[in-house]
Each structure stands twice: as C-alpha cells, then as structure tokens.
Figure (cartoon, rainbow, N blue to C red):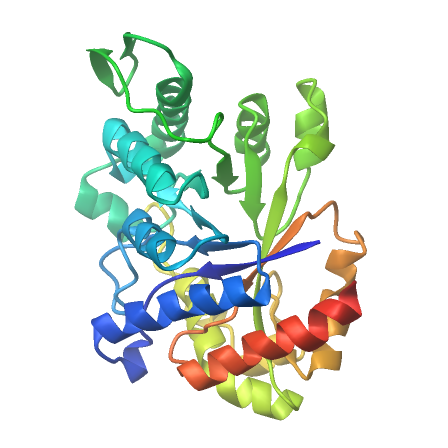
Length: 333
C-alpha cells in the first residue's frame, strides 16, 4: 500500500486566516510528507465558495514541486468543463517539466451547481465535455507533429504541442458511475475516488489488466494520543468538509434538505452513511484502515489521506502526520 496526501486548499469559514498563510501551510504539509516517505500529494479544485477553496490546483502543484524533490504532485481533480482543453494540457505539460517528471493529472466533470452557473456551462453536458477533452489531451501528450481536432464542443486547428517529460503522463479519473468508469478504463486511466466500485471489472471488460492500473481511495484522517483529542482537533473541519458536499444543491439547483446534514457524532459513531473518517489514537486509526489495506473493500493501491482538515493548525496537522508515518503505517504493513 502507498500513502499520499489529498488536499483541498481552503479556509474554514468560521476560523479563516490570511490566504498567503493558508497556502504556505498546505505547502509545508507536502514538504513534511516527502520527509516522511509519502508517495504523492494531490490538490483539488472548487470555485466561489465561502471557504475560498483554491481554483487553481496546477499552480499549487507547481509551487509544491519547486519546494520538493521526490514526492509526486497531482491534481485531484481539475474540473474539466470549466476549462479550455489547450490550457489544461499546456499547464499539465509544464507542471511535469517543472517537477522533472513527477506530475499526475487527475480530472473530473465537476459537481457544484453554482460553478456550472457561473462558468455558463450546462450540467447536462459535463460528461460529454470532459471526455472530449480527455481524448484531445491524451492526443496532445503523444501525437507527433501537427494534429487537429473537430468535435462537438471544441474545434482546434492544426498545431504542434509541447510534450511532458513522462511518456505517457499519468492521467487519473476522479469520479464514479458505471458509464464514466467504463470510459476511464477504455482510455487507460488510473482511478482516484472515494472507493473502488467496479473499476477492475471495467478494465477487464476492455481487455486491460487491473494490476497495471492504480486505484487511490480518499480518507479524512487525524491521529492523536486519544480518540477524544483527535476529534477535538479535527472534528469541526471534517464536519465542514463532509457537509460541503452533503448539503450542496443538486445539478438542477435544488437545495439539499435540512435533515441531510451530517454531524460529528454521526461521523464518530459510524452512522454517517457514505461518509467515513479514520480519527483517533494510532490503534483506532489502524483498526479503521485495516479493511482498506487488507483488500476487504476492493483493490486499492494507494490511500490518499486528507490530514489537514479545514481550520487545523500546523502543529496539530504535522503531529498527526508524524504519528501516522511512525505508528500507523508500520502497524498496517
């Protein structure tokens, strides 16, 4: 099992501080993660929310690459419908060059109604736009000489393209749903998602060997001396993170019902439905993550750990990361 960080660079609206310090703190997490032997660090994208979630994960990844030497840097995920395909591909190629071949491009279709409205894109087109962009980006990374594209959404004339260092540059699909998983498998992408729900079958259905592809599963984590201390440190941030998604409007603009809200107590007692967090003492966290590592929840090659919850301090975050590396990983090995 490999271990990575997954990051939504953002404030907690109830405990906000200067954004230059927020970004500095998240970058310091990546520097420490490299020291502790984590394989990768991922950065997500959202727009126009109270938490000021970063809208430019590739810029953050490039800043991290400049401060590190070995750890891989990636996006989880670039929200394709809101971007120009040429810009995404060029930024990814340059990020790979700046990182000396350490960049992973994770992409997805988006999920927030307000983002589609502000960017003027139809949610009903998000998957078609995304897959047309994926196909063009993969060509841009590999096609020699001049090439062009004429599709439903994008018309790109003959051009040459700056190639990344990696051949191929790893691409990851961030999302679920059988149709999208089938499309990702057809294109030979890795998967980063809340869990592996049928991806191996999708790979096999198009003649691919699942062992050749990575599956990264995302889990909020906080380690402290006791369970009570860990929840005191991270509980408010995890509750905010969960409800960022749980209480969002649907893609038709209808608000979530008030009784859909998830509380810390629901998360702590395992009564939060889909939502899961590994929070507690080292022994508690080992027990919570053991099924992932032992393959009882499907084939997983990487655990992407959200270790800085919104509003957590550097001291608490870095202590949790060190305890995870020094006490949890050896116990899971």
